[in-house]
Image 1 (cartoon, rainbow, N blue to C red):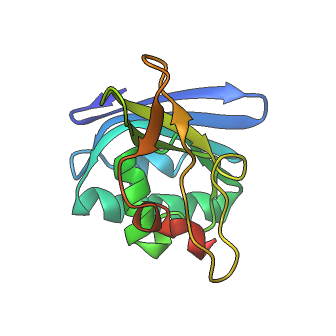
Image 2: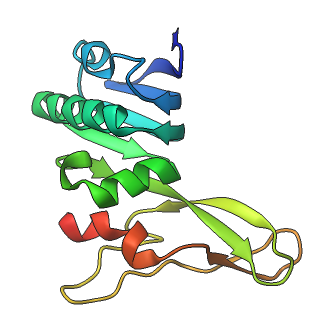
Amino acid sequence: MNARGLAVDRAQDGDRTVVALHGALDERFDLIGWGAQLPSPLVIDLGDVDFINSAGMSQWVHFLADAVGRGPVIVRRCSEPMVTLFSMVTDAVSGATVESIQAHYVCARCDREQVIELAIGADVAPPAPGGELSMPERTCAACGGVLQFAGHPERYLAFLRNE
């Protein structure tokens, strides 16, 4: 299904409905109306959401609240625009379980840029009260150098403080 800026895929994985969003999350797609018919439990793959504007933010918050109200929701492969939203808007991931996020890394040796998927809990853990948020280092596949997170962990992972 393609609705101008956003494409969605839907599949079943046992008793779970799995949906993947691709493209721009904005006013051109009625996410709330489309999502109202989705059964739970629900898994949402956000790895290919590459843009979200204020109208899309509002729709996402309402869509997620409605979905969580019907049952368990897992979000996975959360793209950089979605993680940024989660860290800026408290309700943007409220009630859902964040399984994994994507993060932009840069090699300190060869300057290669790479998007790395990180599992919440295994790779990135919510901090202890008063503790710092940090991102793990990775090894560059191209040169063996150290890949470092290309941002501010405290800002990017702020949503983990709200869990």
